[in-house]
Amino acid sequence: MNPDPVVLIVSSAFGDGHAKVAQAIEQSFKSRGVDRVHTVDLFAEVHPWLNGVSRAFYLKSFVYAPNLYGLIYNATSGMKPDYPFGRLLHSMGKRKAKEVLEEIRPDVIIHTFPYLAASQLGRESAIQLPVFTVLTDYVLHGRWIHPHTTKYFIPLESIKEAMLSSGVDEQAITVSGIPIREAFMRSPDRAEVLRKHRLKDNQRYILLAGGAYGVMARIRNILKSVLVHTDFDFIVLCGNNDRLRESLEDTYRDNSRVHILGYTDDVHELMSISFCLLTKAGGVTLTEAFAMLLPVIVYRPLPGQEAGNAESLSMQKAIYTACNERELLDRLRRLGIQPFREEIERQMKAISRTESSSRIVDEVLNAIKERPSYAGRIFKKTEGKGKAKNAHGYR
Image (cartoon, rainbow, N blue to C red; front, side, top):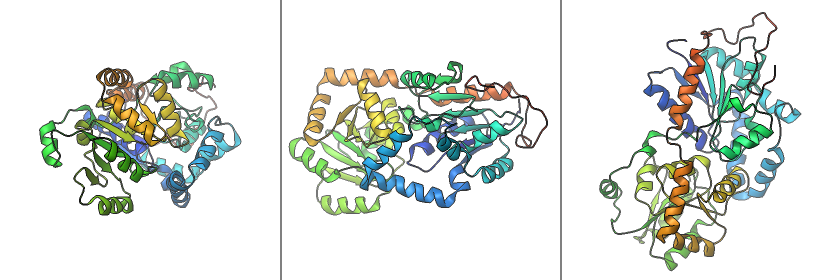
């Protein structure tokens, strides 16, 4: 084993979850003394213009064309890497990707985002580099699957069944859970958190999170309905949506029951003192809430992976969903009834795997240990026609 391995984590700024998972894995590596960890938005590196356009479409589609995004997501969900579209996606920018990889010279690659050009390069290389993929949602999309994958780390047993049906070898799948940052594995002091954020000890707070970019339908109607019909107060996280934050601040400037925040790194603290989380169905946000046993209500799940997350987890009774204000008020009422709350906490605890990052890092380091060190020459041309068996059992 290389005593000082180089780790490349391929992440993305599409949403916030991919980057958070990469950060959690990087934290775990560094806690083991592995310091040469590079987290790279590879798609942005090799295709900055296309990345910008795609990211803008991704964010705007949630607001202006959610059904279109859902249609595209569902139409491509069953694709395989040998399909023409799959080959196109995973081969885009290979030349530039190869330059990036030759500069970093990793001993292992970990994907937290399904841009798998690195996997494609590894497949074409005579020297087989260990390549791992960490799924960041509770539903499977075909973009995550690539034949040159050493192992997949997935959040649920149900996804394993879907991957087996797609031809992935069972030995190449570990049900690890989704990695989260260390902050969500600790219980902050409640009194200290309340003082820090100037909140009241005798009040029940709904933490309303629209994601890192403040994308959530009908936030104003939600606030109005809940404030009128319940005694809950709100902590509203607007993310990086400054326009939304400023608008809500103007509306609720004199209302002591609504606390408006922009992007914050203190989400774990706010979760620890909240009655429930009202949010969109991002896989990482849901996982963070599960770790803190904070009940979740997903309001009007957006088409695509978020609808898949909501359906999968609501079927397991780990979250509530609400499609309108009447259902939202009903779900809030249920969470105030102890048996209902205890049941959903049991299901969250059953799904939560707080040691996910450690388990992933253990397996990655073991894979490196079993191989000679190829750092510095992984992507060089070598002679030889043999092909190692990959994660799918192909040769």
